[in-house]
Length: 573
Image (cartoon, rainbow, N blue to C red; front, side, top):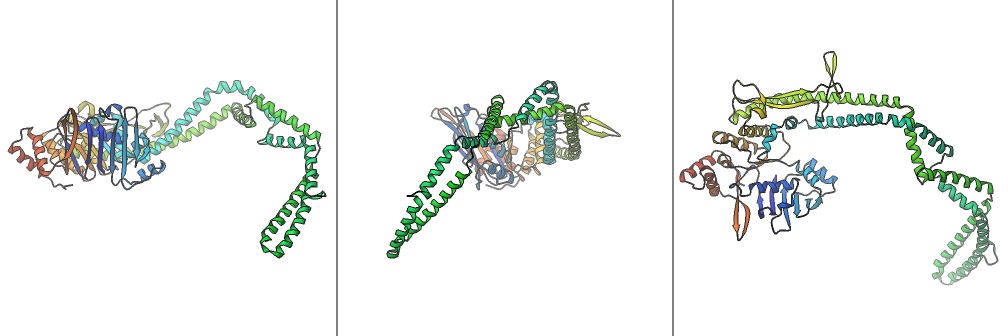
């Protein structure tokens, strides 16, 4: 859960820190007091885009920091480890915004805003006061359906297969587009292959030839120098080896007198052995020296051939070999273009068949989930004051002669358009009055009804939802009276499964709070500030009464507030 939220120099907020609790956290306050600013600050630590205009006038930067408990999930831990961020007992998300840039931190380690967004996606579902309008867009319905049915894994499998088919389709299109070019270039490729293959250079060959050439070109110097060195070290009148033998004998005599010379004696013996080995190497090397002008000329000719290829095909032997590999592939493709297309078509057919199988399984699962969600929403809407509602999930498919999805239909096979989310288009339909057929949501539902439908969806999704924190920003717009009571009870039930943070203007909802906060706008000196404070029991009663009757709170309003607050048990945080 969100343990605390700290905000400094953000919009009208100079500095505030609020400690939330489990269950239902209610935030109230007058219009313009800064409730939306608080939600805006929360949006910053879940990865929303930041405007530099939010920095409080006169400040250098805005800081928003959220501390989360119970956030050490496998998904979050994997994200942190993948980005070399050390997990901590509490997850800390922070955003710093200046007049020219913004930065993100996770557990005090710099992070990208995208990573902040990815981590927050496993923690918070923030539903703003206008978000219920997203229900009017049919593209959101499928995601809600998949979420309710926990179909994310199957959906992800379909998307991976869809990407594979799409890549093969693109590859085939690119190949067909190059058919004429390949035909025209075939003769050139053939000529270049023959030219390179005639020389047939091998990897590393040039270095080996150059090393051998240096030896052959300097054979006389090598012969003379190794002979002189051998003479100096081993064969001459004053050879180093003989001098070391004499030195060894002298030190050996000294060591018989004083054993401090033992180490020196060992070192001289080692030097004698080393000189002997060097001398043997020089003698063997000298004996192997070859004077071979014919081999030298062959090497020079070979290096000249390689050098001509290098000048023509990239400047290095590695570039020549890489060019040969590339044009070899292009030549093979040009020589067997029809065969390449045929093999690609076979691969594409198999990939499309696998995609079709997954699309069908996903569609069947979605139909099963649709039946459950229809019954659940109708039941929930009845609790929210819409007892005559009927709710339907409508599926459509788009036939296409070139579609990637092939599905059996009787003894035939029908092709359908493949979408990134599957073969089905999904739309929610509803009827809120007896005798009326179900129609698309945007054609029949009022603003208040849309809010209740969204709350119904949130409620039925909650029991299987992986997100521990739900934030509602005035989604109770357009409702009042008994309906508001039912919405409040539904929100309180949601708080049994999630930490709920809700901004509301309805006393029926505020009365059910486990913790109640008020946001106020105050003027200190010549500056306007927004602040938030947690209300005591008496202050809560006063605020609920204010929501009921306005600023002139009567004894009757206070009594009604106490009665409303006593309707449901609460745990004081």
